[in-house]
Length: 169
Image 1 (cartoon, helix red, strand yellow):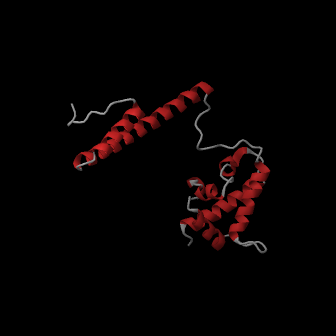
Image 2 (cartoon, rainbow, N blue to C red; image 1 turned 120 degrees about the vertical axis):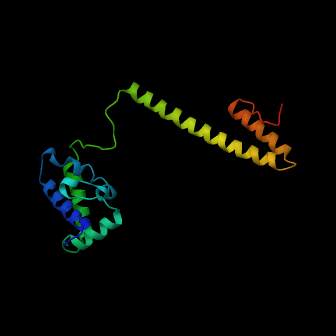
Image 3 (cartoon, one colour; image 1 turned 90 degrees about the horizontal axis):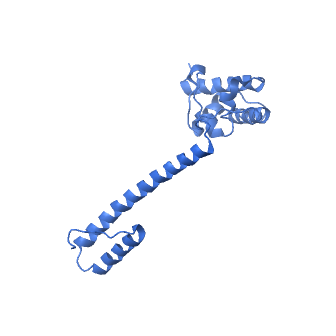
């Protein structure tokens, strides 16, 4: 009895062999993952008995369970088949699981602006947390008035603000 990963590699190999001779769009789910070895190793298709795994595990199970051809081990056989699939089917439009729906340039710009504003808010929050820590350290140590003033000026220059602390005005 084979374990799940071994059976997964065997199932993937048989699907790849079927896809090599198929000219329809039936195997776009497989061909879209053939661009990189890691993508192929991570491929999951429960209905076909294919489980995702790390690249090293994928190599190991291919070597152990895929029949060698000539001087090529099982992994090299699968890798050559992957390259052949890409070469034969590169004109087919591939489905991508990472892309969202097609957006107009205006919608893309709005989405980009939202992402940038979100990143800016994260950076401001991180800087404020860091500023709070530095001010606490400076306030708790004696004789650091010069460093404290430098820090206040840096904060004011960066944000255009003046920092108020409990022990000031």
